[in-house]
Image (cartoon, rainbow over all chains, first blue to last red; front, side, top):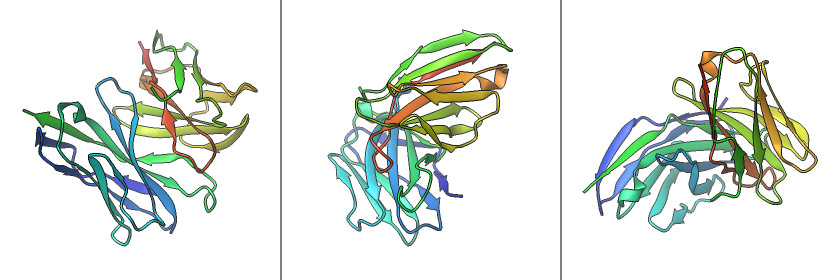
Amino acid sequence: AQTVTQSQPEMSVQEAETVTLSCTYDTSESDYYLFWYKQPPSRQMILVIRQEAYKQQNATENRFSVNFQKAAKSFSLKISDSQLGDAAMYFCAYRTHPITGTASKLTFGTGTRLQVTL
Amino acid sequence: DSGVTQTPKHLITATGQRVTLRCSPRSGDLSVYWYQQSLDQGLQFLIQYYNGEERAKGNILERFSAQQFPDLHSELNLSSLELGDSALYFCASSADFSDTQYFGPGTRLTVL
């Protein structure tokens, strides 16, 4: 079974600075998807960024980018120019590729709470 | 707004009772997923439906059941409720197996 580990329960960053959230995963599959979801105090789960394992290029969405290291099974999220609105719980998630696997559920890490200070 | 709707937003009930949570997926999405978020278990997958058929089961208790109707909305039924069932229940939808899952706002269930 796949597992996702987020070893940083809490992180803090100053406004306008850059922060990196770590995520590692364990799988025997060669093709899969990785996601970062954001959960602000409203508790809504918001997709931040998605990475397909067969793509070598790291995904980028505006101020959010990932560092995907397939061999190391590492998938970190970098937030640049941090804003107060970035304060939230961030979850890393893994999904089996739908063609090679039968289930397309998301397996989540335990989350990292990001605090943004002035 | 993800386009996924869930009702009710909050539900308070007593132990032993039965409740039904409702989810309407994004327009055109055929897959519906249910997840439970609790303090001690984190975010866990419960069950998936695809175009009316059950596709995958996760850590769903026998007291829980779900279905997806012809109009693609889904209901999660929780019965013989226990204090430990108190949690945030999310519904997510995707167009097909390969698409990203988009989450609804969740239903917060409190069992007293």
